[in-house]
Image (cartoon, rainbow, N blue to C red; front, side):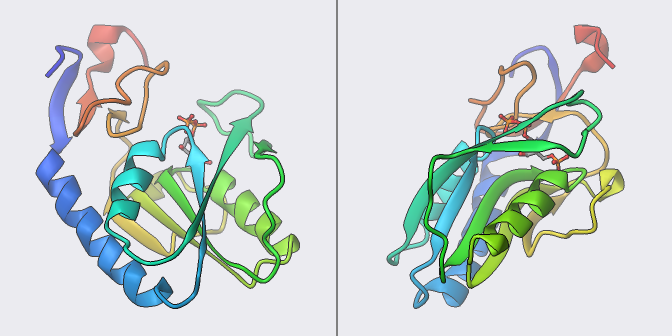
Length: 179
Ligand code: PRP
C-alpha cells in the first residue's frame, strides 16, 4: 500500500465477489439480447474488463471518452462525447461506469443514446455516491454505495495516478495537501 492511501476501503476480494454477483444478474438479463456494452473511459477500464470476463455470452463492446468542460471538481453538467460513430439503432445498450457521482455523465449519455435510437439503455456502476447527486438518475445496477470520500484505485484516479491499484483505497488528502 502506498503511503498516500490511508485505508483500504474495498479489498480485491470484496470487489471480485461483488463483480461476480453483478455479472450473474447481467447474464440473466442480457444473455439472449446481443447487448451493446459501452464502457466509459478512462475510469471504467478495470471494472469493465473484470465484469465482461464473467459474462460469457455474445455481446458487442465499444468505448467512449467523455470529457467535462468547466471545473471538474464541481461537475459543470456539460459533457462532450468522443467515441467515433457507434450504431445504437434498436440495440440494448448497457453503459459501464466506475462511479456515479453528480449523475450528469450518465444522465446525458443515457439521453443521447436513446436519441440515437437505442431500444433500451441501462447503466451499471461499481460505485454509487448518492450524496453528490445533481441529475435525476440512478444506476440500474450498482456495486457499492459510498459516502463522500476521495477514493482511488481499480480504475479511479487522482491526477491520473492510482488507477492500477487492485483495490479501492481512501486517499490521505492531508498528506497530499489537497481538499
Ligand atoms: C468520472 C467517472 C465518471 C464521472 C462520474 O470520470 O469515471 O465518468 O466522473 O461523475 P458524474 O456522475 O459527476 O458525472 P472523470 O471525468 O473523472 O474521468 P476518468 O473516467 O477519465 O477518470
